[in-house]
Amino acid sequence: MDVPRYERLWLWFGIVTLLIFLVVTGVMAFSMDIHPANGMHKTAAPEQVLATAPFDQPGVYPLGNNEYEVVMVAQAFRFLPETPTVPVGATVHFRVTSPDVVHGIAIPQTNVNMMVVPGHVTDFTYTFKEPGEYLLLCNEYCGVGHHVMMGKLLVQ
Ligand SMILES: [Cu+2]
Image (cartoon, rainbow, N blue to C red; front, side):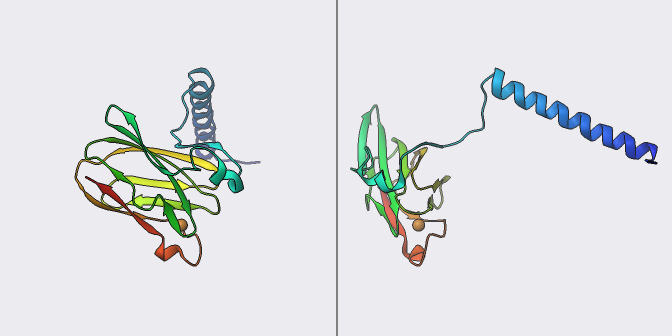
């Protein structure tokens, strides 16, 4: 097969670059234990989510030291609790899951944006520095009621 010289050079350049990339990624993952950030972890069977702690009691729980955990369930087509309330300036750890289909929680004007996968737990931490009423929106199409799936978060 007659491959022009520059074509061959580029092929080797691509192959060598790919190998370097794979070696660097492999060393980082397996030897240095560095993995891509991923807020999603732990699984529970979706149909058992509502009976599994902490999602059997959605709500706002103080963790002390101006930190709060907001345990939420996103389900067709609402969020539980309906109006979580947190203090201004507190560190808020969201912990969210879904018992049915994929939902999302986005809070406009902030960088809160979570994908909520059935049976998976999504964690996200945010500090609300301004008091007010924040809109919670489902930003993953989840069915016929998707457009009415919204909630409120009060920061006081
Ligand atoms: Cu939804």
